[in-house]
Image (cartoon, rainbow, N blue to C red; front, top):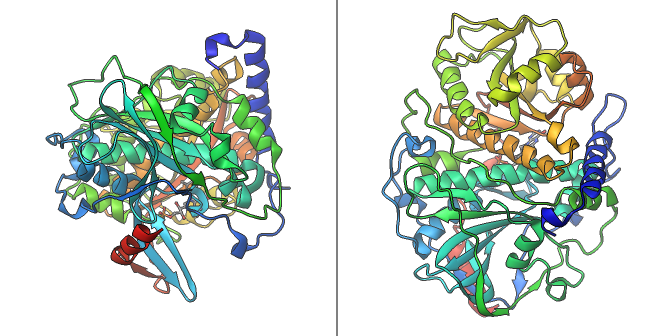
Length: 536
Ligand SMILES: Cc1cc2nc3c(=O)[nH]c(=O)nc-3n(C[C@H](O)[C@H](O)[C@H](O)COP(=O)(O)O)c2cc1C
């Protein structure tokens, strides 16, 4: 339902429901948020959705031939815009949602993708809406990362030519493992996915913009997610965001981001597969949080301004495809000063357009004393953050690092043990060079715009995605950390109300590779699969 049709009182009720969800899904030292007591790994929901009977088109795998430098991702190098066709769309999807590597350890074999995902569960599904894209039928297509293929859900003409990517979440994929907290992880994953699309667009000389003003229900209709007859018992998908892909970008951001409209007949095909035939648990609060936080997507800047410092020299597609989450860090490694400055500069460009503030637990960074630092964020929110952090903090400017003018030293000290405990006792948070803590301003979600709850998590994922890619380009590694003890973080900071809440941690340092795990490139069995698809 469009937001203007929702009564003010209902919005307040929904905002309170969202905040109640947030409170009840906090991890605490005396107990984690409610989740399954046992997990049967053999019964994990399928990571692949497909729509049986929908016509499948394989996409070309062309990322090897794309030479754009990493600087293109941060607006520091202009790439000539690629023509929108099945080749460039193939590159876009491979670099945002495609398989990036196959890992093996003993009898276990698993795939990793261009986009990261909490627990590697990949709740995000991607759809393409296209009109007039050469080599692709007009209509709605669902992306199949397993085969790097599109299946056509709907044949229809669009009112105007163009290209859009729609994202949905299959909440159960995440809830299967993480229980009630899973809705947060799905939203962080959407932020990473949006960041992954933005990066892939930049490589092609394109830009991605969320279509503002479109409500969840309308996105669901466009993507066919409301078609109960096509889902049957299969897990439903939660509409999240629709991105317009500007394939001939003008300078600056466009004022008018078009929404797709069907023109005339729409012919749907395909029946969704069931991902988990025997769900062991139910977590109704997840659906309640999803319901309460539906609303209108607001305009959002995905690309940010260009950093002042030169970008690391690297091929963008390499950095994207080789991005991996570190599972262990070299604990004595010191992050070079120049790398820290570049990270702060690049992440800062994105933070400006968000409702987030970034703190950093600095463990090992050249030129910085160990301690807790504030790195800034949304300029309007900064004064409110200072008021909210009632702990005895210095807020000292750092003459030693003038390149990061927003950097403030809050407290010196060795926080490694503490941050490890705050991050669900994960060693990565202590052994990394720096562990970031993203604080989101909850004020507006609390005052009647409940969809802001999703949005704040998207922003955190978007910044996290930038940190992953920057870390990779600087010869380092990152790990998103969705598991943290919320109120313990707040207590450390002296936060006494809900104005700000921690929504994400992110570790960054030098990974130690696990030599027991072997890695193979993805899609090597592509030719066999092509034969399979022709007969399915
Ligand atoms: C939102 C989010 C939360 C995550 N939380 C954790 C975490 O708490 N601990 C951890 O070791 N990894 C965490 N990860 C990393 C994922 O496990 C990782 O992305 C996934 O296994 C896929 O591997 P890849 O990033 O190398 O592709 C998180 C990732 C995301 C996107």
